Picture 1 (cartoon, protein in one colour):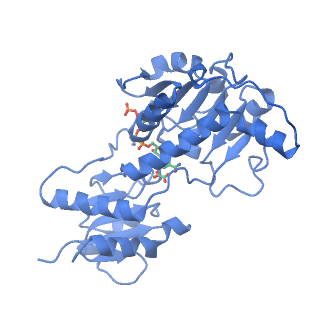
Picture 2 (cartoon, protein in one colour):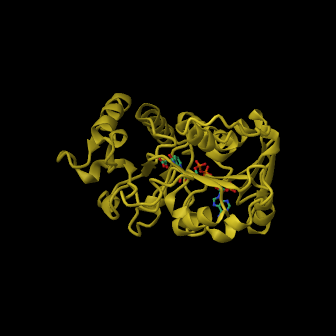
Picture 3 (cartoon, helix red, strand yellow):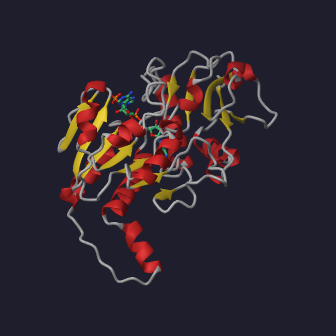
Length: 321
Ligand code: NDP
Ligand code: OXD
């Protein structure tokens, strides 16, 4: 019997999101299942049972009447949640070791960068200044992670092993060894009060949009050894109020920020973030999605589904993540 087609709907615009690159990987892992790359001209919409997508155009998925599962090729599904015509079939997101490890690398790198005063040291180097500053131990710094899911819990564990005091905040209660866990709106202030470096790994939902704003920044620990708190956001740009970030950097409410994600991506050339001395920015590549591992993950999930087993990492449309 002919296997249901897998359609690739990939709109990335960067090398990592080259549809051709993904098509080659999916051809390798799908065996005799037809793989149809959107825009290639070949393919019958009625034969498509699975779609693997990155930022599909709203309405695009509604063209497949026999769709059974949608696979989002990244961890965050916010780009799909706004599509009112999204077929009501399971939506599976990415949760794989490779992506998780990459994000943990990013978080550890940026927490250490601020903890070890790298911005100050690099500026001193440029000025040929021999001006050491006191280095406090990791145990003197509290890192607070917003979002204790696949990514946040792994980063928390790595930071704890380095010696930081680590806390986390999530929707539901959690128990993670060595990590002080807070949850829900009622506990967010207690979580923020003790946080010196805030790491945001939340999904973007109606609940979390612009959660990183002046009110929240003002609740962070004001007596941090670093002088002023630091914010690291690798979740989504929509989580942050960018005008508030700039104003809080200017008036000392925040000491520095690391940003991987922005309200508008690519970051426009006239953004004040580019040249800001207290901003460390990266172009939304904290944790790249690797076509090798993720195509295997999708093929594995299809095999499970066709064998009557449960799909993994299915998004809850009511929560939006
Ligand atoms: P998960 O779904 O595994 O975890 C999300 C976490 O956020 C959960 O702990 C959840 O709580 C918590 N959460 C969600 N909404 C709220 C809320 N309103 N209040 C408190 N806590 C909340 O996601 P991942 O860890 O896999 O990924 C997180 C995000 O990281 C993605 O959605 C994506 O936007 C971003 N990302 C960014 C990348 C980059 O390169 N910059 C790469 C990959 C992902 P609970 O556990 O109780 O449900
Ligand atoms: C993701 C991302 O969600 O790349 O995986 O941001």
